[in-house]
Image (cartoon, rainbow, N blue to C red; front, side, top):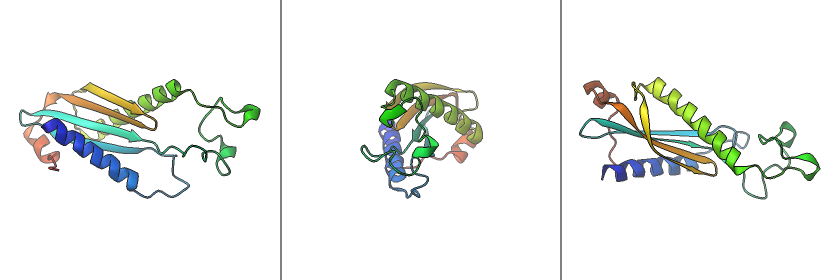
Length: 151
């Protein structure tokens, strides 16, 4: 039941972040982070971390503005005007970035002070989600600092 709540919170956060307004200049440039924590009654601390990158719609992408700056994809262009990126490389790059940003988020918040184990991860075009559990149990202070939000 608690996993359903955690998943629901993550989906809600992803939905809300998808509805947020971005200026056209920033769309696709900076990924959006979603960090949802949950402390179980037994004191175990779990989290969902998502990194969402707005991808250009197929057929629109690199026309006009931004093309002169490289558009963020390297190694495809030539005379053909932008080849298809290697999905495996994009996946690896996005997952690596998500892990780095997750570690930074955990350090900033102090949520997992003794590290964490990754329970599962998910990748889809423009989205990486990492579900994990902290190595340490929650302290009384953790319950105050990271209250569970009921859906």
